Length: 206
Image 1: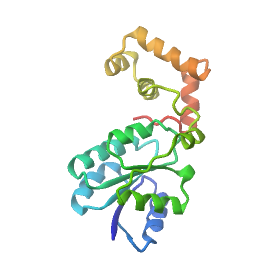
Image 2: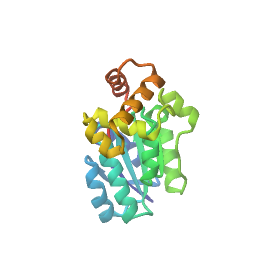
Image 3: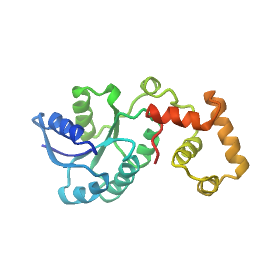
Image 4: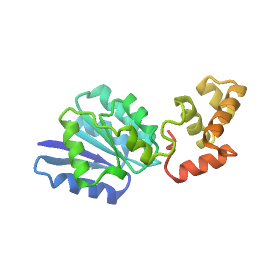
């Protein structure tokens, strides 16, 4: 029997995911959590086989930090991310934290979720391919990692001084980075680009 913990801020999604998984004879939902920050403690107590995080704009940072903590203390526990966001750059952040599989709602019908969960607990790492990413995120592969971090910090209204300190960039380098981003996308201002990306779920602050 595969024991699973489901984490989602939204009651309805949490219930739907749990019902879908619990309907499988080889799955058992050990716990349902609303807060990502509760996951490490529950994992330590229950020792589940799989944690399923539903990522939304307001819990990306918590899911990433909790995943890193869980993989450090319980490396055998499998972690799977599921999201309706279109931000393909989340994949690199998930891999860095040891997340085993990543699934978009875009390509997730009930069978896809169950198949991915089974594959993940079976030792496979399941991530979207490049073609799928291009269908989901129009900005997939456009930005460098540094540019993505810069966009996230601008989205959080960080000052240029804070950005410079965090990314080791001078004011002129920040200006050059912003110009590069605008040249790649064709937008006239960074605020217009951020508004567009946030409205389509193509950028998740973390």
